[in-house]
Length: 172
Image 1: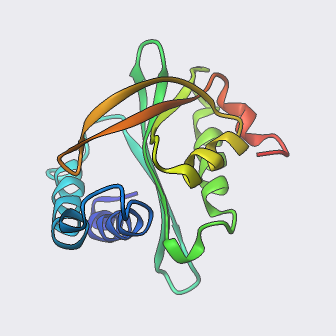
Image 2: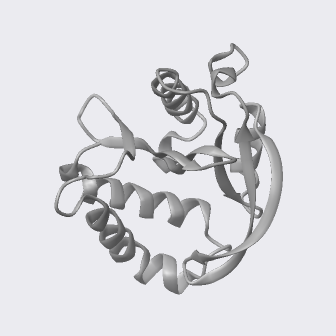
């Protein structure tokens, strides 16, 4: 993932939210604010170059269209390890294995460094995502209310892979 991917990543991020979070986030937010907010977020992450250890992976189709991405913050938490801040797949491609491939590519890239847990947060109301992470072997641990999503409070669960290499197993 590079700075010039920011707008394409933001557009996919917003489209993913508009598809997956309809009825969870407000229609006002999804229809009128999500695209601009995601653009601002992703542009700020890449503004003035990238100084942090964070990194991302993108997936493109044969025509060069961005169809998926993962954004990782290595060593983000002393107890929970590496953090997947975002994992999104184009709504028209969900269920085709791209999310699994992105997760496996994250695990492969992390395999070159210290073995730490890998975690992410998933909305409690996002049943398809919870089922996806469960199929990949996630352990659902603590839950909390998160108010950083769309300006509203939402219940979220931490999904953990204590050893990310388990994502590379055949069942994943």
